[in-house]
Amino acid sequence: MSATNFTTTILVEQSPEEVFNAVTNVRGWWSEEIEGNTAKLNDEFKYHYEDIHRCKVKLIEVIPNQKIVWLVEENYFKFTEDETEWTNTKPTFEIFEKVGKTELRFTHYGLVPDYECFDICRDAWTNYIQNSLKKLIITGKGEPNGKGKPQTENEKKLSQN
Image (cartoon, rainbow, N blue to C red):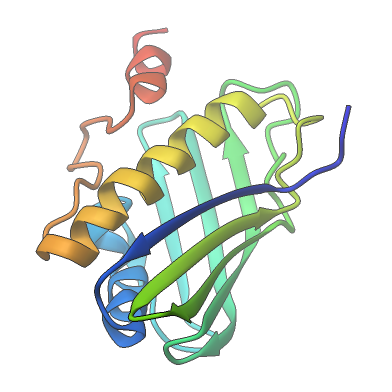
């Protein structure tokens, strides 16, 4: 299998500043159950969804309106043999101006097809970036996981197991 990191891109009319502000509003597009700070260098936050997925993330690079890099310091998946698959991976958000528009490129460095969680994680990230985060950028309202409610079809399936 290829060792390619997962990447997805969106293009919006909003400014790089608006895109940056939406990305750092993690509760607005990923999960309302985020604990901690999500916007500045060295901020740390925790994500959890039931007993299916938990992770601790640190912001290790923040360049306003240009780039945000997370480091997954701890991770737990209930549904994989290696429960720590995401540990030490780097979800990265890069923001570029493109002829009157703004491109957001999300790359999860270290999330590769060899991972057992790859298909589920690819589908989840695609939904969060292409749907929830894009809606947050454009309309001011994303579709994050609500408290105790799954967002994606994969999470719904996992929570039924």
